[in-house]
Length: 288
Image (cartoon, rainbow, N blue to C red; front, side, top):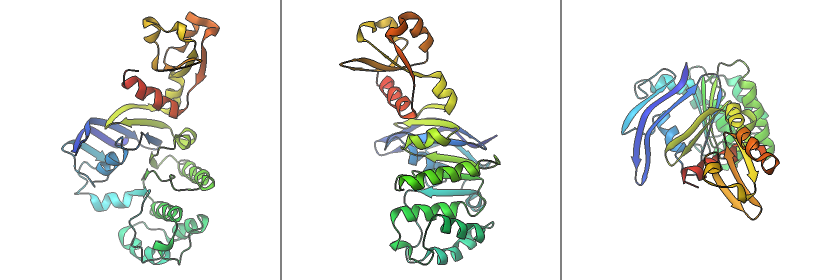
């Protein structure tokens, strides 16, 4: 069963367009949503949580196909963390809790204060005086304190110090041990996803370019390096997103064994990073 199902989502916002996008996010896994700034990540997330209404298409989240009708129930079941929070800035984290107990039926005060302590967020300092990183940590503490079934994280690590980013990834992995929570993690820091994600979804210019299990993706595609003199129409059929330089070329391929058979030691086959998969996929889309 999926935590999220999107079918034929279409939305025009000025010059930007999401075109007939379909996507499924399986329950009990961490799915990484990747793409450049402006690719459509936040626009997609805003449709998932009902902040934007599609021109056409259907969104089902945690079994609900009517976000407006089921908003109160869904708010209790979904934890949200954005790069920027919307908490009342005149309140402290301690006083904010009084509001949160009204919004969330399953609010757990003990868990909340534990995370504030673990994250070194001062409980009695007004939110407006917290650093950007502390505000993100506060949002995370809130999201983790009401037994949410689904966590949606939109660029949560972009304003965090590297040491806390590593701690956050550990926390997310611990949450996955029982397999009952689902995490959708949107980020441009793909090294985070290489460590913890089960699935990778790439969005570019409002379209999904791939949605694959991470290890299957990095197993199916390899980076190929070689001299430019082996490039021709036949070889080009086996390569994607070719990048030439003074030393030769680099490209992505889902047929590395064939290239090895054809060219032997003239080609070097290496494992790709998620960043490189994105780069070569975009190049290939542009016809490079």
